[in-house]
Image: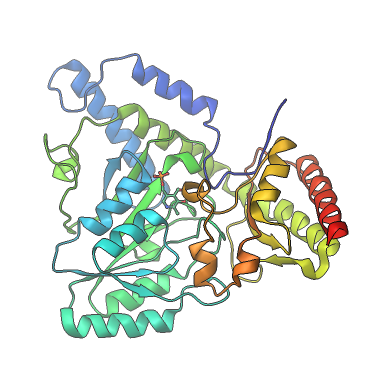
Length: 376
Ligand code: PLP
């Protein structure tokens, strides 16, 4: 039975063209560090892949450090900062920023009820930290949140950071190729991107580092990636990433129309569910593929299981925590009532989805809604 896949913020199908390019690499003995023929060939392949990625996000003045996943890249951005730097992060970061930030005893910036980081709180915290630390601080604010899809004002956050002399990092994993990305224009100093959210391979990501910024490596050894990340480079992974990004950027205009599918679904559930439905961040700017909503009295797990039984894959929160049934930290930070947060599900579309699939989802959801309401 074929599945309807609405969990694209967690991971996506890998494009056939991407797999083909990667297979070609895997069938050769390419080694980026070797001096012989295969080493030279590997260098050319990797340099091309890296410059393709940089060109597509206007990152000419950045080093690209290839990593094994977005988690590693985000860990490197936070834990690799000099020990005397103070870390300031938003309360809604992905766990792979949030947890390292806790280790570094970070300062947390509040988020408003609409899911947008509170810039006046950021301004206040940056000014307190810079009084103590001068320019020795890093601010990390994600570009788009993985649960809500809400786009954060990172250009303004970078301006506040730079005005006080700090370094600005953004986790851009959920915004990459879903909205236009231009690192120079956004003025971020360090950015994290990952391939598997854009139909590239899992286990392929990168940290973009503005030339001149220093980080201590997490992995030490052979000194690969200009000493920022030792370990034999996964050439197929970075090649697959470049190919996936190239395809995604070409499809960006089409992707941006995904909001039509999303809004169609939201309009239908709102009309049917009336006051029972809360759509998080509906009035905030969002990436076009994401909807995060709660249906009063229908627990997230019940919705997920009902959909799964009907061959529809949805999520209850962030991908990495969907197996542990805790209330979303993101909704908590947005001040959402615990009872409502318990009923939240996330739908995240891709270009492979269509209106017939949404109609099937709506039919099952409406059925569940009326069944539960009859029993109340
Ligand atoms: N940051 C965000 C915003 C994400 O959505 C994810 C993946 O869910 C990550 C980081 C982690 O990326 P990876 O799965 O490549 O480790």
